[in-house]
Image 1 (cartoon, one colour):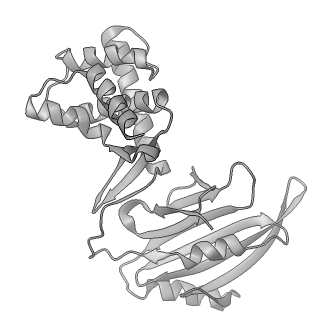
Image 2 (image 1 turned 90 degrees about the vertical axis):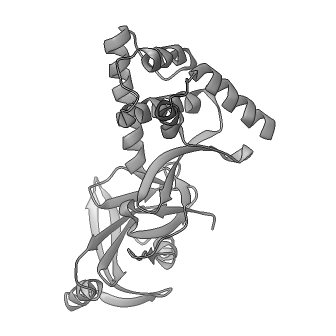
Length: 273
């Protein structure tokens, strides 16, 4: 099965999930995955941390005392509970797996049509890795998470409002908006040292790249305690950090000609294809 990797915010755990599944908005501290093209079940992963290094085992033992069954899935011992319910005339099974290690308890719930296979959930659980807070992991690039999508949207909305306020114009994220970004960069309203401002402008530039260059995708970068959105053009093995693009030039006092940056990136990608 072809898979994609998910590392939870703050790096508590990682899993591998089917490549045709995607992460969707869910409750806080819960991460929802499913295949939007063909529904095969909803997979939710939640994690809870405590100071005690026996926390995961205590939670699992509590579930076993309350009627859950013990099941070995890969290297993980899980307390498993199965419930059935009806919704809008349809019958479903909800299978809940409670596992974890040390001070991190992990709950995986899988909702499927009644009598459906739980193989996908068990294959995901087999890939579960509880990450060590004390360990420095190598930098990783994973599919963009809902967490970073929020960051991208917030930055874009801020730039929209800034353009509207300064220029009395709309900002939609098209190539024609590059000139508007340039006016914000050169306008003198925002100081060179305002890092968050220029990172937001960089993300807005990234949205233009995404909209105008077919194949450019947002990704999430996990680098130690730093987690942030970046971009890649996988077919050309091209990687870009738009958040830093404008900020680094402002920090160093280097002029930033945004249309030239757009043309440069486009040419570099075309040269790799």
